[in-house]
Image (tube, rainbow, N blue to C red):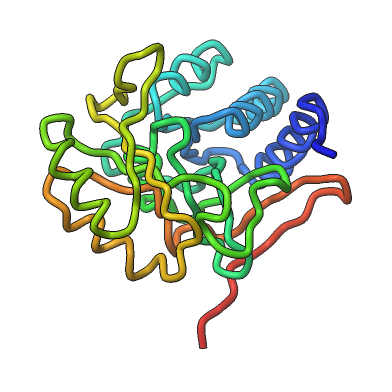
Length: 234
């Protein structure tokens, strides 16, 4: 039986609060996008009310707006070191902590901030933990609208039936003016081989494969909050 939404939200909140406990005074924090990351913003606001001082770098305009409502001071993504980034994911692979992200459409900024961070913590409820990426979630690919026809053809040649994401009968357009192709690869046997092949397609800006970026995953569920670290390669 599927968990009710209220229970899932409690799992998300628990994972977010555990991650926010790692934030220290004076940090520059990457602020993720999506429903789970929004629980982290609320938890940060609570800690700031108790005296914590940080600045945030938002991964989307929605996150920036919500951070301002919480009175979290923001700074631009301008090359300054980011101490810690906290964000959600659509899928988290056990062992590697490789991710699929981009269900909210902010994958380009999310990846830039994850790569620029000294430490990247991914937070999720237990539904997002999988043995192999692609088990449940489609793979989002951000691309130039001008190139959509060619990109979709080349994605299909790689084994994915991609469709341009729609909202209200119109193209979903990201904060950076891109469109998203949601690609039904199914289980991705070799994400490390697939990622550069997608990136090499003219017109593609980035994909939702986040490989080797997460230092740890904090996953909450019916048995509590669990912290996973990426398995070390020999």
